[in-house]
Image (cartoon, rainbow, N blue to C red; front, side, top):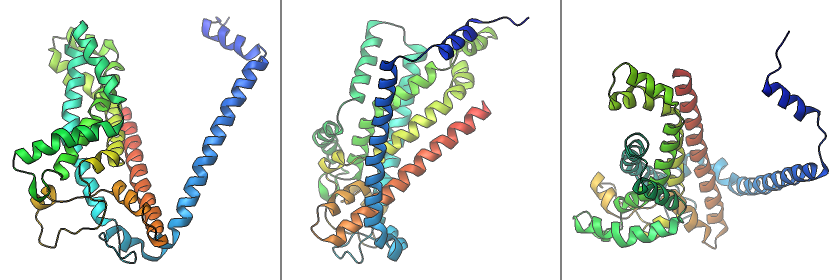
Length: 312
């Protein structure tokens, strides 16, 4: 005779009871909200694709690899993509080691004291601060810092180094939170098993906890990079160029880091303000390019998460 568990009894009770009209109304309101949101999203995407189609069909390769130009027939987003990639690399180098290290300390080493709770609360509050505030922080501190250490270049610190520091400060709380949640999701039995065979705390963290938390950490970090890649407001305050410029053919890596710069979201903002219809089409094509990059990053996050989940 089969034993009826508590879960079976609850499932049978839920399946057999009648829905009240309030529950049906609430479910219908949620479905309506979802459909309205999808309608707006599909409408916006369709409008952008229709506007960008002439540029993408006529000169897609030239548009993606071209440089900024006042002539809409020759303008491209190659310089902007390069600037966004360099900023994203700077964010990854600066924010991820510090953020993951902070999360490991808070969840694995720090005691449950008032100071630890105070730090956690402030980190969560910083994650909700508008990005424009971090732009003001970057303009007031990081621009001057870069200029003071002799890397200001000809733009007095308003360069890609200051932009990387600003966006690293912006995403650092999010990195800490996502890494902390991934570490908290690791069962305590894994830690206890490591301690039971005589492993030190660091050996347990390195060989057991971090591999188990890797899918969540990788997903959070890639999505955080997508957030940094799509930011506009902080870069405008830290000196991203909204017009047209060129670095010259003989520019070195240091010249690119310490001179004027731009990014793909800033280029979209700049072109969308132009009165010419040609530039509006270019702005739509740049938006499509930005969406492709972000969707590719999100797909990479999903693939990495699934790969590490199967491995561990």
